Length: 242
Ligand code: NAD
Ligand code: ZN
Image 1 (cartoon, rainbow, N blue to C red):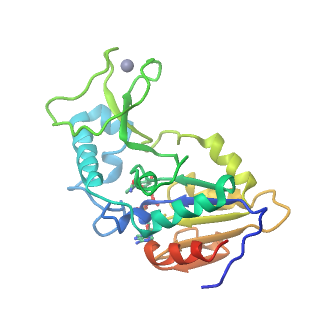
Image 2 (cartoon, rainbow, N blue to C red):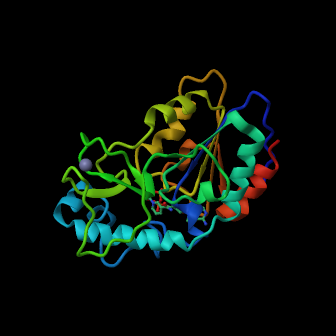
């Protein structure tokens, strides 16, 4: 692997996707083991799905909670957390993952653009109740309700909904000089366009690196494609950065 030196002025933006958690035992959506029962993901993770069959959606998220509870961070999560300690404010991490493996590895200020698996909230946007920590696995026949009468739903950004914290993410993309994407297929927007946003309006070229076992759909946008599993490539890549 080509050694990449960071200068004290560099700001690193890291984007992670389902692939970084795959080796921890959390299935990706598109991998061979990525399907749940016979459903397509859009039939489980959308406001329409929740309106049509909230019990099915809660069964899916209860299953995901139970899987995630038994999983531990892997060497890639650990390497990123260590890298954050070395770089401090010059490091920004945004994940599409809803699991908490980055935090379990010791990372802080992780921006979860697609929400958090272990949080729930009222479905009514005008309800005053804040989102809350929730690891409950709900049986299909007894679904949680808010005091206001609205239904409680997972605090997840579903298909067709706006990703969370986009202002913070766009500001970090504007200041980064190095962009690293790990284990994401480059299909789901807006995350798939972050690599382009990172390069826009910069006076110096931005180094853009992808890490994963296969080419993402947007591979042509990257200056470097480091082929391999996250646990093998990420510790080596970050360990060589000072
Ligand atoms: P994806 O399922 O579309 O793609 C996963 C990517 O990971 C693929 O490109 C694959 O080549 C790569 N990959 C597989 N094994 C890998 C490994 N060992 N190391 C590195 N890369 C590996 O996932 P996505 O692009 O993140 O987007 C799909 C959506 O799925 C996101 O919105 C995300 O919220 C959601 N999701 C999250 C989780 C989680 O929280 N862990 C799990 C599944 C899906
Ligand atoms: Zn409410």
